[in-house]
Image (cartoon, rainbow, N blue to C red):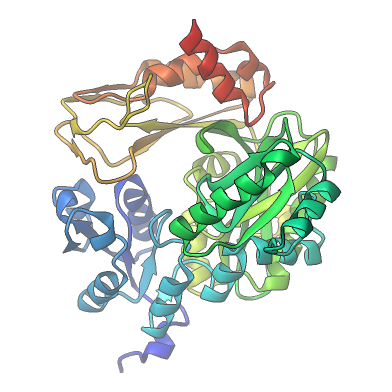
Length: 461
């Protein structure tokens, strides 16, 4: 007897539509195969020749090359799921992965959204409500009110004085490094508010803002969580994502160097408690700023992270499989006492871009050589002859290494980068090779502003 939409939505599915492209589509496909699930791959017209199309059980073109008419076209994706007989949708990262309306539409269509519920996405997607939820759960937050900024200029001035300059203005619905502005002193406050409101309105559909203390030398630390629908949740150690350019991560590592267990343990458990309080399901990431031995919550990503492999390498947990099993309704198969993180891992994001100007580079890959060996992993969708499209994010591969110590992992990454060759397009590999020769980075003496300063010095040299 066929399942009703309500039955399908409980998580009993055997076919997953992958609502994404590139390396993450390949990664999800592999996890599904390992779990005995069929996959439906989708593509835009620009991705018709994508190699993962031939390894999926079904491959459907859903629209033109532009993302707005294909990978962001909710109706087209839901129609593709129905036509292919999929019972679930995995959104990957980016695109619709944190879109509460899309998750809700999938739920109403009787599909399992492989991620948290639409209500959880909505709660944590708004930075103000997320901060309020974290305060209630005892998670340490950046100083500043958990309410939206009012319109009254005098009240805004008072809030800034109470926090203390410098402050940072952020869009409540922001993300990806957009919709934020640092205010060093009072005489530029109102101009910054006006500019950020307009930016937020255009980028996120809401002019709602909030204000926090701007930390001047923090590190960016993340805590990975996995939760089921049965009241179980664990955290899988921590990672450092401080190497950023224009608020975009370039290199990630796990664990974060120099943070002792006694400091991180209560923060990790507070994250678990927060998940239980809001009824969170699936995988998620709590992002913190860390300065002078203190953690400050900034946001939660309600999706799979680009940098999940470094946590997989150190914890031994297949995070994508865990995410899928949570969506199927399985009880989490590990307790907190079972989690052990060993060794050290780095991930480099390899982008199709000029290594000096960082401008995107489209074209055909004429030659590709990827490193192999113990402790080396490459997540990619490209091959010799692959055409890199100008329509999407420039990420073409992730190079991940694992070794017993941080120093050994850095040495292994240098070796792996030396053995990576991509010709026909420009890539950021020369930039990454230079970065892994930097002394301060090797010593772990960096914060979220370090890479920008390093780049300025290189350009001036």
